[in-house]
Length: 266
Image: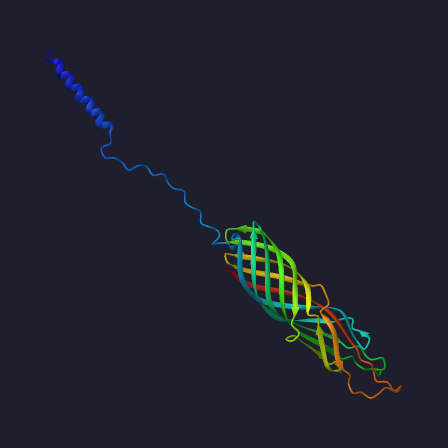
């Protein structure tokens, strides 16, 4: 009979020890699941991801005159040589982004320069053995340009993008600032009047690295920019038939412009 209390006591001690072994001696901190790290916003790295950007750029230009009509005293000049001169420009723009596409209106101030040279045709009554003389036209055009271009990003990864673009450009040719010089034309006070408004077609490509970009473009002139050539006739003696020699200059041209620029997005 004495064994029964002893067995009961042993069973109680065994049960308590098992319960103690299963319970943690020191409560552990609750498990914390690792939180997924937020991806760094690419808006700060690539401005093409923002809905709207503003920016500035500046660069250099090289102009090419496409002469469709150049004649002196009714004699057409067949061949002219373009001599490129470096010009420059500065521009403000706004870019509206949607997916890989964008629309970019701009406004820029441009100074384009070019020189053409050619050989003057001999007069019909020139003595035998007379050598033709060289002549040239030097032009500096100041303009305010407003292109509106559509672009598409061929590559758009992280801070890098490569885009192609194109669109129309409206130009205002500032006659008061522009200047054209005619060398060795044997005429006085030669002046060129320009059409004030002109339309070009712009195509190009741009490489963007974060907020910095490089822009290459080619502007194609669609219309003649030279309205008329005015001058004073030289004081020459009359010809044997009593009439003063006739003088006339016709000059029609379009200007194509190659440009390179460097810019930043705000």
